[in-house]
Length: 105
Image (cartoon, rainbow, N blue to C red):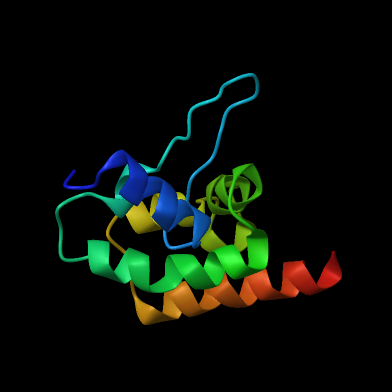
């Protein structure tokens, strides 16, 4: 990527990039979908901040994206997004669900 280490961590602290740490690790991991060279990359950055405002940055956000859902016919949001399905409908559904979950906690 064209990101510096400090740039990555600044974007993480500002909730512009999703990052997480595995238990017992001291290094941040950043899902590659945020950096893949495609026309959809900008779309990911458009909604990731909103998602993180509901879930917080870290493993909960990762869990939210990777859990398989009946509403997605057994797929996760991560799988749907990796299939380049960045439709406005899917993103709106995802953010709406994250918002509902956040208000229940």
